[in-house]
Length: 169
Image (cartoon, rainbow, N blue to C red; front, side, top):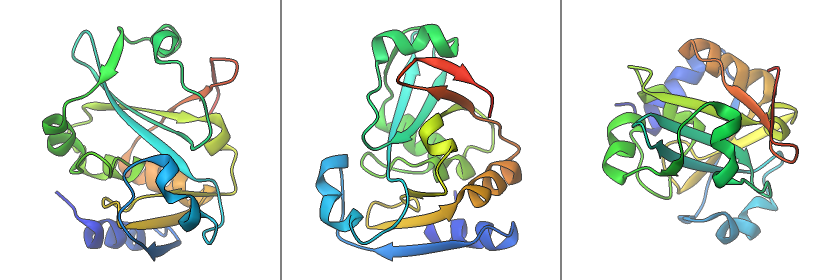
């Protein structure tokens, strides 16, 4: 499992420009409001989910996006969704609750987690995620996010959450 330093090394090896800001631990979207003010780009919320058939899902959305978990499964092709257990989060993404991040996909070497990306993030010039720990925020450009995903061989399901439709990445 990679840690923050390993993630940064992955970025460097794949040409992903990045900037990291250290800060106090942030566990929920609303807690980091003052911190976000000094970090440009779209800020995120990330949900680690498990469906009724045992499939794992990571949803990364803009921090103010409303996610209708009761209807989302019909759009992404999953069974009914609920929050995944912390043990599975650690096992697959190498993060603990409060540190869930799209960058955790770097640790999902078996491809067990399906990645769903908010269209608002897919369209943002810069995006911010925790670098595998909730005591920092790492900013990457849209091109950097795409390089990161390409380096993992991952293509997200892109969802326009306001219309609850899948769109082309």
